[in-house]
Amino acid sequence: MSDQWGENLGEKVVAWQRTHGRHDLPWQRNRDAYHVWLSEIMLQQTQVVTVITYFERFLQRFPHVQSLAEAPLDDVLALWSGLGYYSRARNLHACAQQVVARFGGQFPRTEEELKTLPGIGPSTAAAIASICFSQRAAILDGNVKRVLTRVLGFAGDLALSAQEKQLWALARDVLPPAADMPTYTQGVMDLGATVCTTRQPQCEACPLRADCVAHAQGTPQAYPVKTRKLKRSAESHWLLCAVNAQGEVWLNQRPTPGVWAGLYCFEMFGSMAELEVLLSQAGGSTQDMQVLEPIKHVLTHKDLHLHPVLVSLQKPLNPTGRWIALPKALALGLPAPIKTLLQNL
Image 1: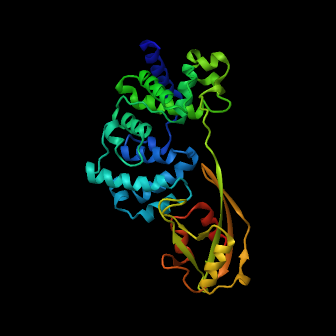
Image 2 (image 1 turned 120 degrees about the vertical axis):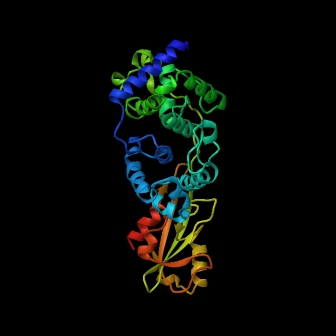
Image 3 (image 1 turned 180 degrees about the vertical axis):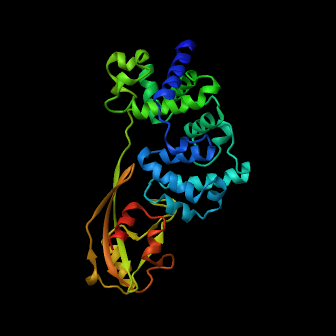
């Protein structure tokens, strides 16, 4: 690829972004690193339409990185509840604390320093450095991989680290001058999100159509190439949904690491037999159990088959959990299916 061709690609993306790109997203109102970082973390594995509400809610509760760093982790998880991928929230909190402790509450300006912070990988670091500080840093999230592999006709298998490194190098080759980096970075992300989509790409609206190898081949959906597929698994869990005479529910904070680490949940068991043993020890009766409709909850790498069992109980179940009034319980950090169950009690 010639240097001139790479420069032209960058220029075309910049020109397209200024006229056709997205300019009304809440994190685009300024180039504040806290806002950009927060949006980048939330947008990992999550659609823009979902993120907008959470982003605005977070800024109301935590208007700057200092307030986020000082907040209890439980408060952060509670506000994140329903967004999924909760390790992002734990890393978000840890990152804010390090920004305050190590950098005086100001995000570092360089890609390399940003990558030393929890939860900030190469692409997120590049997004912050380029959008906020006009650094010539290349992002390579899912949208950008799709744009670049199609335009370049890059058929390397991205399941192989050597091929991904090669694509990173090509992504750096097409960067425009530093002054245009904020516009280019936003533009190439927007192009992948709104035009060069996974299915039914709108090639007629793409500023790179004339240069695009995949378009010339008529095979845009053949890119990017990634042969290794994520292996899915399934787990079954029985949930003891205990309620006392005061209308309080018994919840326990999930251990770290593990599924729903740090979130509040009903007691979970690997079988109905295990549930019945604990229930008996707590003075409950299996005759009073009400087996609720099973729930299938889909995670990235596994399916959870949840079997809720509703019981009335007065005694504590163990030393680690506690009885919590339902309104307070609903304000905690809860996995989505647990929140739904509580709302329906």
